[in-house]
Image 1 (spheres, rainbow, N blue to C red):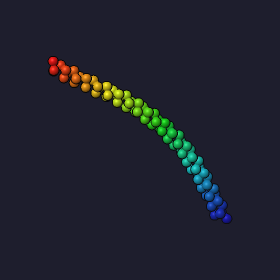
Image 2 (tube, rainbow, N blue to C red; image 1 turned 120 degrees about the vertical axis):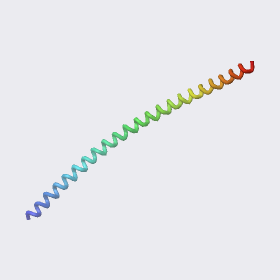
Image 3 (cartoon, helix red, strand yellow; image 1 turned 60 degrees about the vertical axis):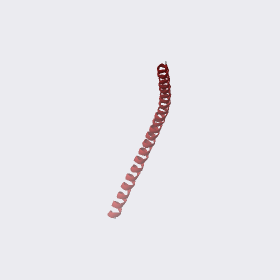
Image 4 (cartoon, rainbow, N blue to C red; image 1 turned 180 degrees about the vertical axis):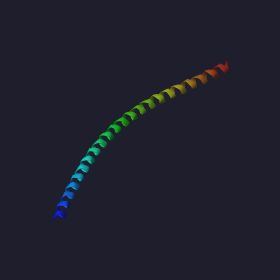
Length: 81
């Protein structure tokens, strides 16, 4: 009879531990999901910023190329005179 009582106590303790593990797991999963959403939002902002700066840089590079072409035209014109 003592063995049965001991087994019941062990089973009860195991179920309590299992319940705690499930609870901790749910908390960790919730924390992970919130963190993942935050990271995804931040990544989205970085992507938008990167696209914005890439577009500006592309415009600057185009302007530099136009100025270089104009410089070469002026040099050629000066050489012809």
